[in-house]
Length: 355
Ligand SMILES: Cc1cc2nc3c(=O)[nH]c(=O)nc-3n(C[C@H](O)[C@H](O)[C@H](O)COP(=O)(O)OP(=O)(O)OC[C@H]3O[C@@H](n4cnc5c(N)ncnc54)[C@H](O)[C@@H]3O)c2cc1C
Image (cartoon, rainbow, N blue to C red; front, side, top):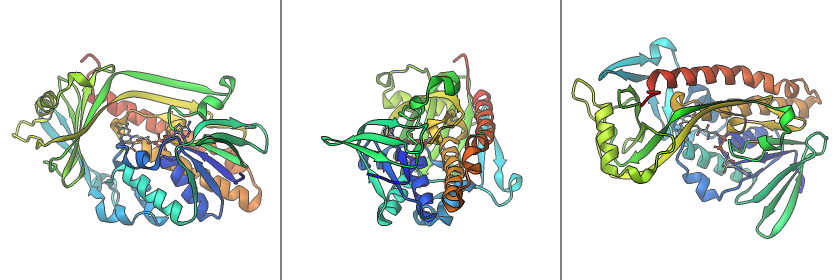
């Protein structure tokens, strides 16, 4: 098997890169460890920044987003039961955030790639990267009982924080900056109409809480909890009791309750791997950096990376020039560090470090 760009991981970074390359007439093959069903159902991010929304629409994958996305022109920060509205319309004229679930973006991108004849191999295993320092890198993988090799010109490592790509770079060539936070988020998806039209970020003496939504019928809520928390300690009644205690405001506002459809615990850490490239391997998204979810930046950052990478690869294939490819890491890292600082600041402002 041969392609121009071999992409590891069918998350937002890998799929968007494959889509952008296709629009530039560049071939790619995506290799994904999980099934299509799994990646299309995995509940994660939900807040899209204006740049992400614009890119999805401009590149023809924004139809459902335009129909179903909930546009928010501000958010609320709550301290001591009193809310303060941050008005995006006044502060950043013409810009807003859109609430649209990450797995819906994934569905849209997979559909677009398959309709355009794109190749995505789901449920592959034993991925290994070879020849990264040569002009003929390759990806080894297993599909069913068969061992295969994908030869390529370049490899994009878009396989998230626990993938194989970052680990394939020799330790001496990589500097990793990391911070673990002494708390985690317990997140729930509830079948309850959102009681507020905007997101509410709450600092409370019992710990942080976030009120958000996924649709006019589904509320998404998060609670600060201990990092090693056992979900068995959190029956639904305790979750609601804690959410009500933290989110209630002095004017009597309360989140509406409903059946909990899904719940999970997410650790919180900041990580940056520098540089984001090694030979013919380019890291993008969570494979290169992790931000705590408080700033809602991770997926937006993943999309920003692959936009830079797609432009650099397009220039290489059109003219043979490597300048943009050579500068890929430096270009991305300017944004990455700003986003890291913002996410750390927002996390520090809203959480109890001693809870
Ligand atoms: C609770 C929570 C809330 C969040 N909220 C927001 C938000 O509101 N806004 C926001 O912007 N971000 C948010 N994020 C972060 C966001 O979800 C991630 O930053 C985003 O998924 C990164 O995309 P990615 O494509 O880089 O990586 P991923 O989405 O992790 O995709 C990587 C893919 O690679 C696959 N893979 C892994 N290893 C291998 C392998 N060895 N071989 C092949 N495939 C492999 C994985 O199965 C996966 O499909 C949130 C995250 C969490 C956990």
